[in-house]
Image 1 (cartoon, helix red, strand yellow):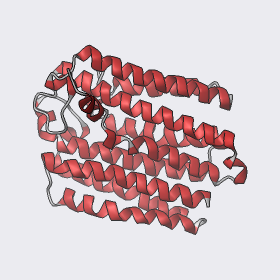
Image 2 (cartoon, rainbow, N blue to C red):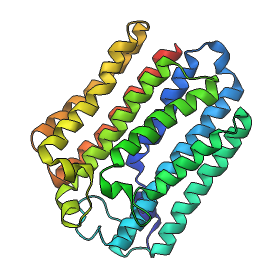
Image 3 (spheres, rainbow, N blue to C red):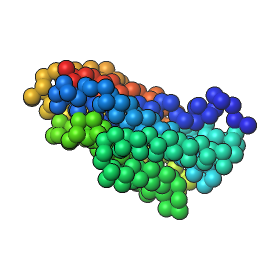
Length: 294
């Protein structure tokens, strides 16, 4: 039986910045609309959006553990221990943990939709749940076809940021769209780092991630391009809101990760890159959100 510490580790706490950052960024974009969006009711909506995002990330981490484990693609794993792949927990228990997390996200999302009175958001919520499960689940997981990074960009960038701005601020703005692109790009960079780490083992187990399809050099180039997007957005936002230059503070995290990637880090050497990319995303989103709300 897996220990509590192993269950917590399987939830991948280091990936939680991917859930927190888009909600912060979306709240900042909404707060930029004016002081009326600081009302307690709007704070409640932002917190519910955060619960949805956190539950989805935890759920997809358990779902990946389950789906990869029963397929046997974790047999040569380089990254942190998986519950099913290691035999520490029964597949059914891990699947139940994933479904329970998705249920939390669904309930919080439903309450949020009721508060916002925007029932069409049910379709977006259903798409997010389906995207979380079918990343590695089902007969034809899109994560095995090289579409994982695109899905992360859409769900943890566009959908999460603009969804938060919409339910909090009542509309979507150009600022929100720019911030969503930035967050989506950096979130995708986290997955690129993950798949670069697992490139050799994924290739051996017929897991055709984008890194496997592109090859090592082009994957490193893609990572670099994605990491630079938020800083380009920062410079664009600063044209009308100079305070958003605060986002450049995230360079303290981005520069070392880029250096490690281009120095040829492989396998377990890329674990710190994955972690630090997620933290860089959180720093950028936090600084930018506060600057937009100021």
